[in-house]
Length: 355
Image 1 (cartoon, one colour):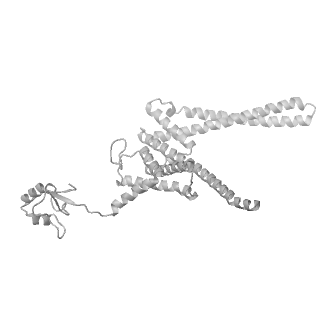
Image 2 (cartoon, rainbow, N blue to C red):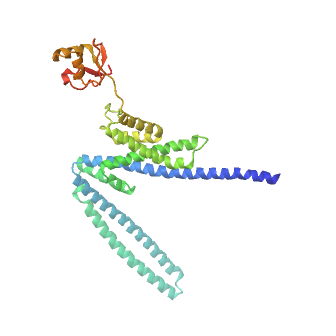
Image 3 (spheres, one colour):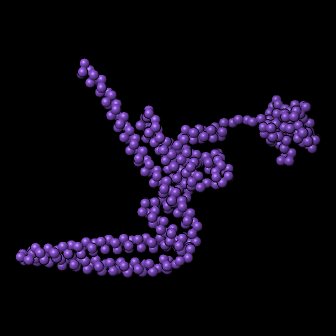
């Protein structure tokens, strides 16, 4: 009986191990996605601001020149620090060798001679480094004396600030993104925000829901959010999706900024099902032909008939009705008139949609 009980426990143990392994894989995958999405979002948003500052700068050539000067200054300062550290290490080593020669090599001529040789080599190396340090300091001083660093007007201050921002972006690896065209930046921001929204949704499901989905759902859901965010952006730019932003302008295809795009993309990633439904609805409106009834008002129709000397049958033919249909002889207050939008000039139009 004990042997049978142990056999029955094996599937339970294996299932528990598989569940823990799956949760570990999903957790590592989510961490990777968070890192990649956050890096892309930061890179694109910072690049948007950098390009806006470049566009607003009084002279782009001055900005590029300042970036070059600041880059050279940073290189020289870094070289100076490294050489100074190296010089300090050699001085410490020389001091150690001299103490060893003084206290431990007095009775050993061979060892004393070896230590003196090593001390001479280190002192020679220290002299060379001192010369390099002086040259680097002179180059650095000459660079700092450049008029571009000494100007104190607002434009020069802004130029130095932009150059400093770019160098800081280079430290974080944002330089390739900052040099991309604006439209490409927008697409990367949209896709990365869509993926980021999906990762947020997956994280909520991972921690809140008791029954977890398949591993494939966690693997491919971020890509679904990225693609849906991109599709929503295309709908917005094409005018098929009209939203109202904070400026109160309902034309979503025109008044776009990076933060509005980020908001739209991240909710498309979080609410991928609703985003898919919105895209499907837009496609249905385009590819489904639904004719709407058109109506002609009695007073307007009578005025048009009198102006053009038409009777009821002439009016129906003039407005291009369908075969077998025509307005009622009495011209009811609202009479159905198919295709009534054709045939009349703007000031003679007698039909209205819906009412």
